[in-house]
Length: 621
Image 1 (tube, rainbow, N blue to C red):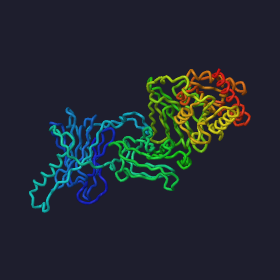
Image 2: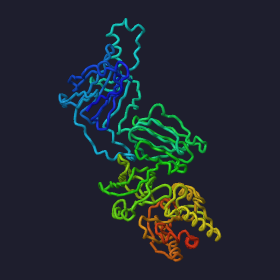
Image 3: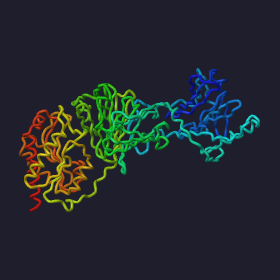
Image 4: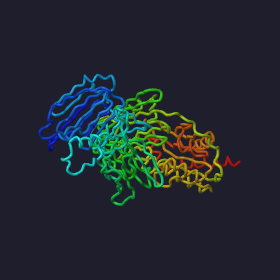
């Protein structure tokens, strides 16, 4: 279907503005600023062959911006072209080329209240209840059926006193300029003289995103525009340090392209940002900052804007005053590699997506509650059985799940903002490369202690109690005991700061300890689980896990949940014996009350320290 839209009156003659389209290739628009007299005559088209095409003229009209073309790859329409056919009188000509074999006699031309519709085929309507907002696919095929080519006629050198020249001479100049094109014409010739222009400001369609706003707000960058926004996975660059996020199927207004902004106008940081047109249909937002890992993308409930913000500066309560609750959850297995989960909310949800090589975290900022028992029942025996939800004070809810590096994550949001669909396509699982049993040149009697989480990463949270605080307290106690016994202890974090998993591993490698111990507090969706777990990954770490775990079980009156072989990042990538201890469940009310006491913390720290000392002594025999 081919549509010519008209807007309010300007001056004589009518102005033909631009070609627009939607992703079905069934609707194509020519935007017209109509003169006070309207379109001067009824439109009729003529049919031509070799190639199969039709054309029609728009009388008393001028083309703004020059020749424009759309080339389709998967449609009965192969090409649409509009050009200034004549200037005396002013006539704009539209030519539509079809696939060979298409019966152009079935094309219908209709004028309804100034809107001219050329009906070629019945529009193909897809199920668009869910729109993509985050996609890690290497090739985004959502809009691959159409290629956009917006071009302008080159300036023609016409001397003063044009009226004295024969009309056909002036028209020859214009026709020659029209033929200057980078696209192959029907005669097989290719012309290479072209001047590009940006017509993206006229794309007012739900299937694309046009960025026309770019501001500093709440310690970050607010990107706003027309259409529906989609983001890709963030990545980081060095020299200087930068965080980058791409927005596929997006155009950027030329007025704001490559404009540098200070993220903190108040001088509280030196971060700077730029947004540009990285590819013809992909925008790129780059923030230069000393702390690139701090930035997170926050999606608005209406999918019209994106806040790219430093998490430490984010005022969660300023994002929205609309409270939402998680209602139903649905899980579906698509195939052996692909699984979907749909979360339905009572009101539109504002959320953020954080993805690294080992996990996915979704922060649901305005969600205040969910039904734990119903969630457990729904997720049981499904691919998403390990998905955990945690209530975060003054933030909302965090949904977390472990992933492999090669897994592909796709997230879609309903048009009303009340449902989010998460799709995970599993990548090829690769076994890690062999790691030496003990790091060379380890410092005897030295231990790296890793307090889990920290800073903006709270870990598990219940009743205002944070995992990160308990883990740090116990870790400090372990360090103190070890030092009092003549051992060396190095902490990946000594205070409430965020340290990435990779930084923790690099810290340990630089310290060259004998062993690595990561200290955490457990949590579950259900409230019943309690007890102590100890995790290891490499076989050479199992003995350390057994010794420390036995000491903890002996010292603390709780359930023995045993040893687990688990692929946690820090115990997988360190090159010395490494374990991760879970000292109890914050989600269990009874155990939570114990975990915050000095008595339980000290017993835990003493047992871990004694296990470490016992293991080190056994290795020196």
